[in-house]
Amino acid sequence: MNKTVLITGANAGLGKETARQLALKKETEKIYLACRNPQKAEAAKQELEAETSRSIFEIVILDVSDLDSVEQTVAQLPEAVDAIVMNAGGIGGLTPNAVTKYGVNDTTAINVLGHVHLVDKLIENNKLNKVALYVGSEAVRGVALMGMKPVKLNNSSADEFASIATGSFFKANVDPMVSYGYVKYLAIMNFFAMARKHPEIKFLSMSPGGTSGTNAADNLKGPMKFMFKTMSNTLMPIMGLMHNLDVGAKRLVDAISDNKYESGKFYASKKKTTGEVADQISWFPDLNNTMYQDNAYEAIHRFIN
Image (cartoon, rainbow, N blue to C red; front, side, top):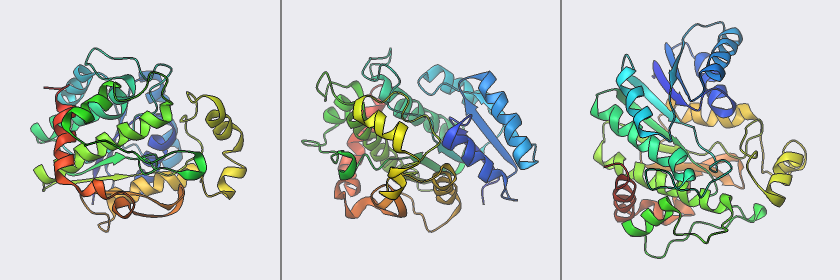
């Protein structure tokens, strides 16, 4: 039972819908909406209160790409939370390959670096009690119908994982959706290492699947953007590549609420990007390699320590 939950990227899309569904659970007493934009956060809070008839939402201003912002958020958080849903992210905006002041590219900054530091600081300050959920993606194991190949590393060393974080692993003109899958893999492997370091906390990853009603396609390019923008509510659901926003959010709610989902596991669609979910180890055995997990942990912490 999770009485208090913090959700990053909670002012729209999956984050907001996850907050709404959690508020409909009687056991939920407080939901922290961690958002970058105060105005959008306030608008989301008012809408959620109206939709759920509950005044349990609190705003915390957080920019997950800024480590100082992360530390301020943890310091100002008035209590420990039972669960965190690490939902903020995306393909890196208009400049996914641009390198930030921390030495990682924009995609890594918004998807991995801030979330890792956030969880580290929550644990360090005894402000995380039970569950750390990282929102994953089928991009890790590949989606053939969308032309997305599985993540494939040469040796999975710490240096190689670090090169994913900086962007040097990729060619200069890499498709952002390709690098996105690798960055998500880096994050998942880091959190699996953390699952072994902190057995008292359940660390897991769940993909919401192909989900309409999000801003995920805004910064895509070419055929991929066309497909998402024009077919997300028509052909893609028929192909098993897209479902409604509430379905994707329910996966996240179930992941932190249902004990059948285990620590150190990555759950995503069993087939394509919708339908039944399954542990991805069957398709991607490297997920279970503890040395690779530790290498990912070491790599991302090079940019924090």
